[in-house]
Length: 67
Image 1 (cartoon, one colour):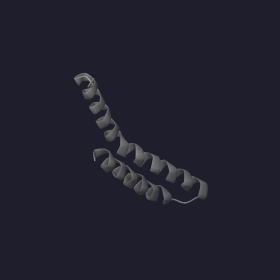
Image 2: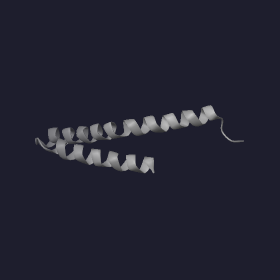
Image 3: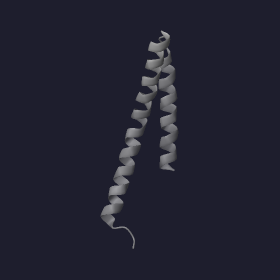
């Protein structure tokens, strides 16, 4: 039996909400990891590097999710 229209709409909404949250969360996680490493090693630049890595990972996952 095919899924009902309401179930299909709910799945689509969930998928697009997941994609909308993916990029900011991955950026924040990367920045948090960099901030933690900055604190651990006493540096002041790792948060920027890890923020860029997190953003790149989020964009890659976003492209995969849209494909």
